[in-house]
Length: 131
Image 1 (cartoon, rainbow, N blue to C red):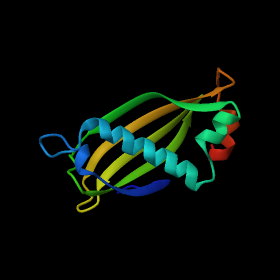
Image 2: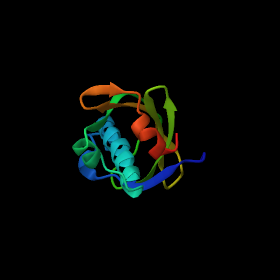
Image 3: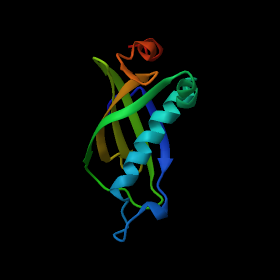
Image 4: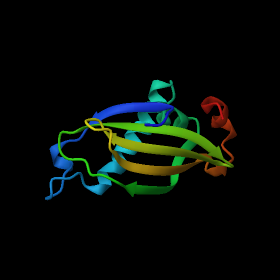
């Protein structure tokens, strides 16, 4: 497993699975988003606080590659790295099944900052992220 800025352990829930017993593809987006939010929280940041200050960070693009399925009640690690690409903050996120460290999902999530209703270069957040 490569090095990550942040790793969060989670577990799938039975109701997230389809008739085949595997996690429905849409739930992976929830896992990825929960990881980004928890990373921010653990670093003292808050989407809610930023919103109250007129700053919204929104997803502009998601590319997900599904590799190996997760099943109900499986523990997994949701990992992220962050880089800046111009005005975008790009989260490189991977999900691994904990039992065998199989790569389940590899995703690239691009976000942009909107300040007072206008797209921003993101400078107001870049220093917080060390970018």
